[in-house]
Image 1: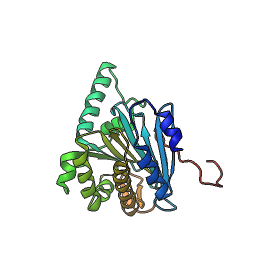
Image 2 (image 1 turned 30 degrees about the vertical axis):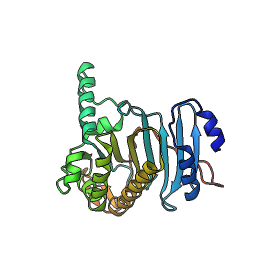
Image 3 (image 1 turned 120 degrees about the horizontal axis):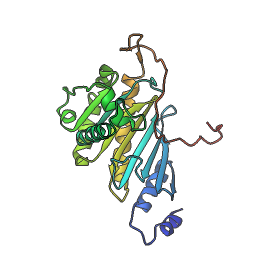
Length: 254
């Protein structure tokens, strides 16, 4: 595999530290593959039997990310209608400005459903004050349809870890969100993809997933539209560019 990858990218800019990344994936028993058009590296694994994850590095799926994007998805079976969006503060300001320009130029009277969730949710959901953590408050913005649930999730160890992560990102676009019962992460990532970035991202993703299962799994929408901590309840879904997981060996395709 390594020789094929070397031939594929011979004469081109180095986008991935292939020897180190392949050795890292092999050591952890992770699935690793690449796709050419558009360029994408796919890595898959599981934190446990109920938390399968998929990580992709390559051509951005969002206009607000330039260069390369590192994105991830974790299957968590959270309440499907619990929508929480944490994003870097500069990105929040960028998306709000873009949304204002788009809506005013088109003389729009409602939110464009073709816009990404990040942009629509900033207009749809209340902003949540991150008073408990200075690291979060100065670097991130938060919106959610369940503010209490969002604050319970982004507390303690996760708040500290997110603050540390932002310090190394230098205001690059970053998104962490729950959608349709899953956890999604998006961030700008400079080339070449390296083991340090993979390890840091997976470490953050694992902690965010664990905290989500601890604090969000029992939240549900009540009849009056408020959210209470009880048992899960599902209804509508939202549009999203998905990161499909490959079926496990021997499993029926989904």
